[in-house]
Image 1 (cartoon, rainbow, N blue to C red):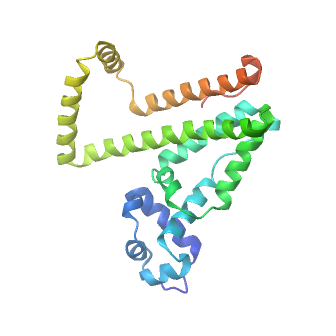
Image 2: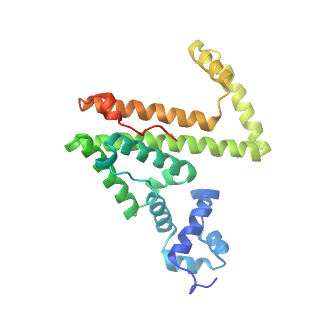
Image 3: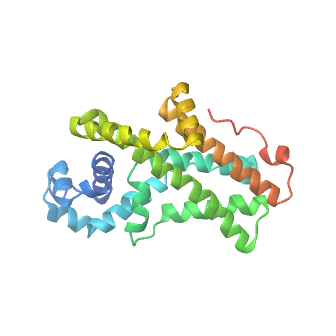
Length: 238
């Protein structure tokens, strides 16, 4: 593929695939050019820099977030679906959350996301600085969960694929067990969790849903709303 057949859209798509596979540290213009059958200089010509390329890739992903009109479905359902969509994309594209502080560019996808977040909590009844904090609270909850869960998922994958990593993790787990044994409440909870033998993916989703419910309940109480009224319909995760 020559520079004449390259375009920014193709490059961003290829970059997302490489980022999904290798993460931020694995992205280089040379490797990206090889995947496109082109020279790194041709890639630079279209996207200017690695940092700008990451910003473009991030903005495309943020643009995929599912948005529901809070005026039609209610603020709580709109907030719930926004949170779930954000979490799903943050876990699927494990580099997306770590990329937030690494990119100077600010794109339409993120602006659209933020504007919609304000629409949701404005519909709920928040105003002024409280509106800012409501938006920030939901965002912080979700990106924190997505960052932690995507990191754990990648760690499990490396555990499966690399014998040396598997050995180190087994040693770390044994050391952690010895520490946990010194604290009775922690020991009891770890033992019960082990007996449940829950699927890690399901457990992570359950934890997100619990936290999301608590946060939205708290917001409804802050607004003086009935929890039954605020919850509305259709918020069960499919």
